[in-house]
Length: 334
Ligand code: ATP
Image 1: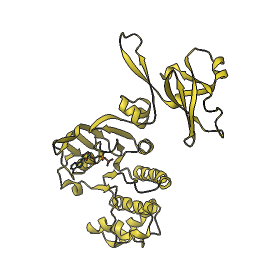
Image 2 (image 1 turned 120 degrees about the vertical axis):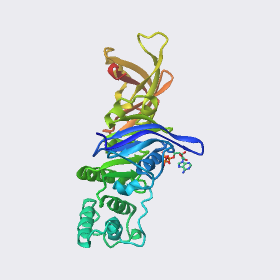
Image 3 (image 1 turned 120 degrees about the horizontal axis):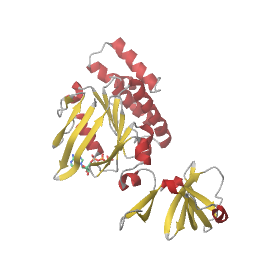
Image 4 (image 1 turned 90 degrees about the horizontal axis):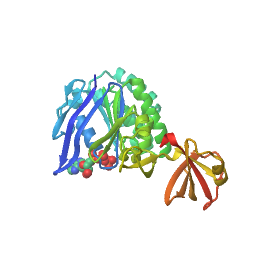
């Protein structure tokens, strides 16, 4: 049975529809990411799931009970961390984290034990007496997360909680959140517009555009089998090449080819490769740049620019700009 059910949610602001017939099912313990461009409706959907906002139509069911605006968040034991993590500035890290337990009137011995435990999991032990302004952005973010986790929520809602930290901390924070979430088995809904973040962290990803679900699937499915052009373009990079469907008359189509599925070779190498199972193209190398562990080449062939990625194992390009090069595409990836 699904732990969270989003049933046909519509929402408009000032006559403009921002969510259209959203349907989702989330299993207990799952980590699901709402992914889409800025303004597509992710935060609005999360707020409706949290019961902070009401849909114009449809309903949200959490653990078999319908969410009613304004009252169910506490009853349902939902934890939330927002983009601006809003710690209490006049409280220490310990006091910030202990806040929810104090409200619940948990005995102070027990509070100390639970706060220490969650600080240990999040590697912020030793910061107990620091005020927010005495901690880095990343540490503050962890305190905010600890504050949400310490009450052991049944459902954790995270709205771009890593937006304030630098790229390096962000990388380790992703893994940390995922580890903690798995360890504690908390059903989590995470909002981001960062496709890499979604691919790294999620059990399943909901790709949203213009208030509609474009695809709902595992990172593997979303990356390797996008069901429409929006998803293909939004996740990773694709080359779109006009073509036709063999066996269908007058049926134009576009072929999508990932840059990592194309091999860049010299003109001489191209001549030595047979035609079986591959498509061969010749073109001019117009651009070459390093992305990190991969390097990207832009080759103009038959009047269009084709993007090719390959492992960046060698210093410098084996090819010179403006050089004639070959491209090899396996037929089975087309
Ligand atoms: P971002 O990644 O930029 O945070 P998002 O995908 O989370 O974007 P939402 O914040 O859900 O998008 O906003 C969806 C649309 O609804 C936007 O066009 C936004 O301007 C509009 N919107 C959101 N909240 C309100 C509101 N309270 N009143 C009017 N319009 C709103």
